[in-house]
Length: 225
Image 1: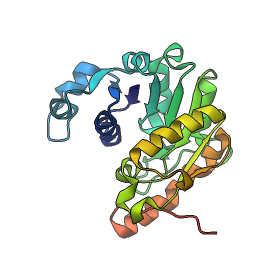
Image 2: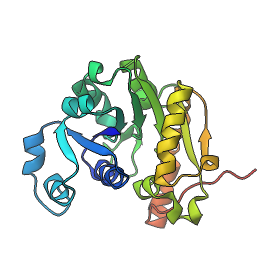
Image 3: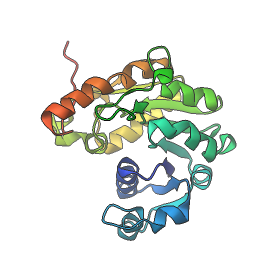
Protein backbone atom coordinates (compact mmCIF):
# COMPACT_ATOMS: atom_id res chain seq x y z
CA UNK A 1 0.00 0.00 0.00
CA UNK A 2 1.09 3.57 -0.63
CA UNK A 3 1.19 5.37 2.73
CA UNK A 4 1.92 9.03 3.41
CA UNK A 5 3.32 9.98 6.81
CA UNK A 6 2.82 13.68 7.54
CA UNK A 7 5.65 14.80 9.81
CA UNK A 8 9.39 14.13 9.83
CA UNK A 9 10.02 14.10 13.58
CA UNK A 10 11.07 11.02 15.51
CA UNK A 11 7.59 9.48 15.39
CA UNK A 12 7.15 10.09 11.67
CA UNK A 13 10.54 8.58 10.85
CA UNK A 14 9.84 5.57 13.08
CA UNK A 15 6.57 4.92 11.24
CA UNK A 16 8.22 5.29 7.84
CA UNK A 17 10.94 2.79 8.74
CA UNK A 18 8.54 0.21 10.15
CA UNK A 19 6.08 0.51 7.29
CA UNK A 20 8.78 -0.04 4.68
CA UNK A 21 9.97 -3.08 6.64
CA UNK A 22 6.41 -4.40 6.30
CA UNK A 23 6.53 -3.94 2.53
CA UNK A 24 4.56 -0.71 2.14
CA UNK A 25 5.57 2.19 -0.10
CA UNK A 26 6.09 5.23 2.12
CA UNK A 27 6.42 8.95 1.52
CA UNK A 28 7.26 11.35 4.33
CA UNK A 29 5.65 14.76 4.11
CA UNK A 30 7.37 17.96 5.19
CA UNK A 31 6.78 21.69 4.85
CA UNK A 32 9.93 22.45 2.81
CA UNK A 33 11.91 19.54 1.35
CA UNK A 34 15.15 21.46 0.77
CA UNK A 35 15.12 23.07 4.23
CA UNK A 36 14.44 19.69 5.82
CA UNK A 37 17.32 18.03 3.98
CA UNK A 38 19.73 20.85 4.81
CA UNK A 39 19.59 19.96 8.50
CA UNK A 40 22.42 17.61 9.44
CA UNK A 41 23.22 15.31 12.33
CA UNK A 42 22.63 11.75 13.50
CA UNK A 43 18.86 12.22 13.88
CA UNK A 44 18.39 14.41 10.80
CA UNK A 45 16.02 13.56 7.97
CA UNK A 46 18.93 13.56 5.50
CA UNK A 47 20.72 10.90 7.55
CA UNK A 48 17.47 8.94 7.87
CA UNK A 49 16.91 9.04 4.11
CA UNK A 50 20.44 7.80 3.51
CA UNK A 51 19.81 4.85 5.82
CA UNK A 52 16.31 4.17 4.47
CA UNK A 53 16.53 4.58 0.69
CA UNK A 54 13.07 3.10 0.07
CA UNK A 55 11.38 6.02 1.85
CA UNK A 56 10.41 8.98 -0.32
CA UNK A 57 10.32 12.61 0.82
CA UNK A 58 7.98 15.26 -0.55
CA UNK A 59 5.98 18.29 0.49
CA UNK A 60 2.86 17.73 2.58
CA UNK A 61 0.79 18.12 -0.58
CA UNK A 62 3.02 15.78 -2.60
CA UNK A 63 2.98 13.13 0.10
CA UNK A 64 -0.80 13.40 0.57
CA UNK A 65 -1.33 13.03 -3.18
CA UNK A 66 0.93 9.94 -3.18
CA UNK A 67 -0.71 8.19 -0.24
CA UNK A 68 -3.67 5.84 -0.47
CA UNK A 69 -3.71 6.02 3.33
CA UNK A 70 -2.49 8.95 5.42
CA UNK A 71 -0.86 8.94 8.86
CA UNK A 72 -0.80 12.26 10.68
CA UNK A 73 2.37 12.26 12.79
CA UNK A 74 2.69 16.03 12.99
CA UNK A 75 2.87 17.96 16.27
CA UNK A 76 -0.67 18.56 17.43
CA UNK A 77 -0.27 22.32 17.72
CA UNK A 78 0.65 22.47 14.02
CA UNK A 79 -1.71 19.79 12.70
CA UNK A 80 -4.36 22.15 11.21
CA UNK A 81 -1.62 23.97 9.27
CA UNK A 82 -0.25 20.63 8.05
CA UNK A 83 -3.70 19.47 6.94
CA UNK A 84 -4.22 22.74 5.06
CA UNK A 85 -0.81 22.44 3.39
CA UNK A 86 -1.50 18.81 2.44
CA UNK A 87 -4.63 19.94 0.61
CA UNK A 88 -8.25 19.03 1.19
CA UNK A 89 -8.55 17.51 -2.30
CA UNK A 90 -5.50 15.30 -1.69
CA UNK A 91 -7.00 13.98 1.56
CA UNK A 92 -10.71 13.73 0.81
CA UNK A 93 -12.01 10.18 0.47
CA UNK A 94 -8.96 8.70 2.21
CA UNK A 95 -8.43 7.17 5.64
CA UNK A 96 -6.43 9.47 7.89
CA UNK A 97 -4.90 7.78 10.93
CA UNK A 98 -4.42 10.52 13.49
CA UNK A 99 -1.84 9.79 16.19
CA UNK A 100 -1.28 13.41 17.23
CA UNK A 101 -2.16 15.11 20.51
CA UNK A 102 -3.06 18.78 21.18
CA UNK A 103 -0.20 19.56 23.56
CA UNK A 104 0.76 23.05 24.66
CA UNK A 105 4.47 23.34 25.56
CA UNK A 106 4.45 27.12 25.98
CA UNK A 107 4.83 26.88 29.76
CA UNK A 108 7.43 24.12 29.71
CA UNK A 109 7.12 20.56 30.92
CA UNK A 110 4.81 18.84 31.44
CA UNK A 111 2.65 20.30 28.70
CA UNK A 112 -1.06 20.93 29.05
CA UNK A 113 -3.84 20.30 26.53
CA UNK A 114 -4.66 23.14 24.14
CA UNK A 115 -8.03 24.39 25.46
CA UNK A 116 -9.82 24.76 22.12
CA UNK A 117 -9.13 21.09 21.32
CA UNK A 118 -9.94 19.52 24.68
CA UNK A 119 -12.85 18.66 26.95
CA UNK A 120 -15.73 19.42 24.55
CA UNK A 121 -13.64 19.10 21.38
CA UNK A 122 -10.57 17.23 20.17
CA UNK A 123 -7.87 17.42 17.54
CA UNK A 124 -9.28 14.30 15.90
CA UNK A 125 -12.64 16.03 15.53
CA UNK A 126 -10.96 19.15 14.19
CA UNK A 127 -9.32 17.15 11.41
CA UNK A 128 -12.65 15.51 10.55
CA UNK A 129 -14.33 18.94 10.40
CA UNK A 130 -11.58 20.26 8.13
CA UNK A 131 -11.95 17.32 5.72
CA UNK A 132 -15.58 16.10 5.85
CA UNK A 133 -14.92 13.71 2.98
CA UNK A 134 -12.06 11.92 4.75
CA UNK A 135 -12.37 9.01 7.20
CA UNK A 136 -10.46 10.07 10.31
CA UNK A 137 -9.46 7.26 12.68
CA UNK A 138 -7.82 8.12 15.99
CA UNK A 139 -5.51 5.49 17.44
CA UNK A 140 -2.02 4.90 18.90
CA UNK A 141 -1.93 8.37 20.51
CA UNK A 142 -1.79 7.17 24.12
CA UNK A 143 1.68 5.61 24.20
CA UNK A 144 5.37 5.85 23.30
CA UNK A 145 6.07 5.30 19.59
CA UNK A 146 8.19 2.23 20.32
CA UNK A 147 5.06 0.46 21.57
CA UNK A 148 2.88 1.82 18.76
CA UNK A 149 5.01 -0.06 16.25
CA UNK A 150 6.12 -3.05 18.33
CA UNK A 151 3.57 -3.77 21.08
CA UNK A 152 4.91 -7.26 21.79
CA UNK A 153 8.02 -5.86 23.46
CA UNK A 154 5.89 -5.16 26.56
CA UNK A 155 3.99 -7.96 28.34
CA UNK A 156 3.81 -9.94 25.11
CA UNK A 157 1.59 -7.24 23.65
CA UNK A 158 -1.09 -7.68 26.32
CA UNK A 159 -1.97 -4.02 26.82
CA UNK A 160 -4.54 -1.62 25.43
CA UNK A 161 -4.79 0.53 22.32
CA UNK A 162 -7.90 2.61 21.69
CA UNK A 163 -9.49 3.34 18.33
CA UNK A 164 -12.32 5.64 17.34
CA UNK A 165 -13.81 7.12 14.19
CA UNK A 166 -17.08 7.63 12.37
CA UNK A 167 -16.59 4.98 9.66
CA UNK A 168 -16.72 1.32 10.75
CA UNK A 169 -15.08 0.09 7.54
CA UNK A 170 -12.18 2.51 7.95
CA UNK A 171 -11.62 1.34 11.50
CA UNK A 172 -11.49 -2.28 10.31
CA UNK A 173 -8.85 -1.39 7.73
CA UNK A 174 -6.81 0.42 10.39
CA UNK A 175 -7.11 -2.56 12.73
CA UNK A 176 -5.66 -4.74 9.95
CA UNK A 177 -2.65 -2.41 9.80
CA UNK A 178 -2.35 -2.50 13.60
CA UNK A 179 -2.21 -6.29 13.38
CA UNK A 180 0.76 -5.94 11.01
CA UNK A 181 2.51 -3.96 13.75
CA UNK A 182 1.81 -6.83 16.17
CA UNK A 183 -1.37 -5.65 17.92
CA UNK A 184 -3.79 -8.37 18.97
CA UNK A 185 -7.38 -7.68 17.92
CA UNK A 186 -8.61 -8.26 21.49
CA UNK A 187 -6.34 -5.47 22.73
CA UNK A 188 -7.73 -2.86 20.32
CA UNK A 189 -10.72 -1.27 22.06
CA UNK A 190 -13.24 0.54 19.85
CA UNK A 191 -14.59 3.55 21.75
CA UNK A 192 -17.06 4.62 19.07
CA UNK A 193 -17.17 7.72 16.90
CA UNK A 194 -14.52 10.42 16.55
CA UNK A 195 -15.78 12.33 19.59
CA UNK A 196 -14.08 9.62 21.69
CA UNK A 197 -10.81 11.30 20.71
CA UNK A 198 -11.63 13.80 23.47
CA UNK A 199 -11.04 11.00 25.98
CA UNK A 200 -7.97 9.40 24.41
CA UNK A 201 -6.24 12.76 23.94
CA UNK A 202 -7.05 13.55 27.58
CA UNK A 203 -5.00 10.49 28.56
CA UNK A 204 -1.83 12.44 27.83
CA UNK A 205 -1.63 14.46 31.08
CA UNK A 206 -1.49 11.30 33.22
CA UNK A 207 0.74 9.53 30.66
CA UNK A 208 3.24 12.39 30.79
CA UNK A 209 3.26 12.41 34.60
CA UNK A 210 3.99 8.67 34.64
CA UNK A 211 6.69 9.17 32.02
CA UNK A 212 8.26 11.84 34.22
CA UNK A 213 8.19 9.56 37.26
CA UNK A 214 9.52 6.47 35.44
CA UNK A 215 11.97 8.32 33.16
CA UNK A 216 10.88 5.90 30.45
CA UNK A 217 8.10 5.60 27.90
CA UNK A 218 8.15 1.80 27.92
CA UNK A 219 4.82 1.36 29.72
CA UNK A 220 1.15 1.21 28.83
CA UNK A 221 -2.29 0.66 30.34
CA UNK A 222 -4.42 -2.49 30.49
CA UNK A 223 -8.16 -2.84 31.00
CA UNK A 224 -9.10 -5.36 33.71
CA UNK A 225 -12.64 -6.69 33.95
